[in-house]
Length: 608
Image (cartoon, rainbow, N blue to C red; front, side):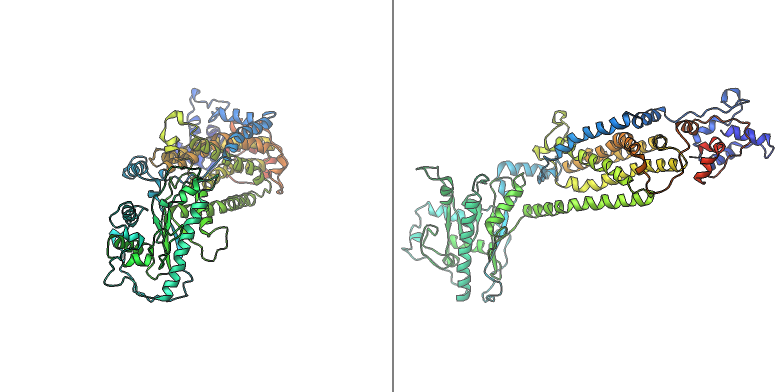
């Protein structure tokens, strides 16, 4: 107590009475909390500085002593870890049901022009219009033939087709069901051609394009067959495909005469030869693509516009547009992307000329798969490196092993709770937007990747703060369990305050109108609160009392000479003012000096 030091100083006539400012300076040297100064600044009878004794400082919170005794003394030191682990296992099992959500509605605000437009487009137009997929079909080897033809003019804004069912397809369909020009399709009458040829005659190019059109027709056939195979039938029809070699006609009719569903869907496919008018089951009309390019009518004009859009200017490749008949960003996105790639020959086969899929959905699937393939290595590397730092800093090889249980299991439990809330709508009854997903969109795929390493860092920070105090007390001669209790008491208020500050700061994301930000905010806020009030308060102290010899191995520590009774003197010291010991004013010193000098503990107990 400061008043005792002042009385001792007066009795020895070593100096005049210290002023309050000098007492404050002395308190800083001794690392005494400023709120204890008021206990020694007055000699009045009611101030606690009587003639024979010092006033006992009031502890900051008796609750932490109660908690420390509860979680570190048998049988609670064994029951608490079992109970906490049992409570964490349930949400961990929920994590096994996690499915990455690719829903676009998670990435833009719930209210806004983009949100309104998305909902309107989703309800008023076919689902595939929102995100058409493009298949790039090469025209043979790129080095076979140089480009001897005149390149067409660049695409004009009006050439872009708003719907996968092109203007050419709609015009063709209208002409097919009318009788205005029936002779055009049976070859009985000639058609007008352009005065200036659209393409120059080139036998080598004709040969390449003939094979290319056959490839495009075979690709359409295979996709219609493979994408409608049970049990994963995606309902893709010929009208959902647009290419230079296929006519986007809807010739569907109700199932009749026992025809299989896939046979009826295949009836909608009609192909074009490049320069042949031969008719067969797939090439239903005696007209070729080359003839269409030279037609001087609406059909020719629309096909030329389609050619400019889908054929590359160097005639090395063309694109096929696939508009899936469902929301391409739903839960079926990943299997559908892989099914399309298998059908196009770019995955699982060794075809010589496969078609390559490109779409925003395909890019997203590749990004997620690459991220989650490396995610285990990211976690393992992060945890291994930080645990190595902890082991080196504290010279304790097995301390990180104990911390592993207090970090990995709670991390998995946090994500399990998030899956239950956002994927299974566990808190839907609260009708809180921040704790639910729009239109059952699920748990955003990026949330675990964005937040896991941050949560690991915050959790280990708090564990390290506690363990540092425990190691400090143990080095000063306290037995392990007493050091754990003292460490929890000393760090309890500070870590709790820090955890609450972080929770409030991160919880601000729950007020955001973007669902993915809400999920990130919840995971980080819940993770910090769980570590602050459950893991660091209950699980870590209890685990440190089990197998105490492993906490500090291989470093050699002084033999324990202090127990809980010394902790009582440490935190609520009541010293004899007649003692002639002069307290040290240094916060550092030899651990052995403290262990061998009880008077030093009595006079300098508040230095910690």
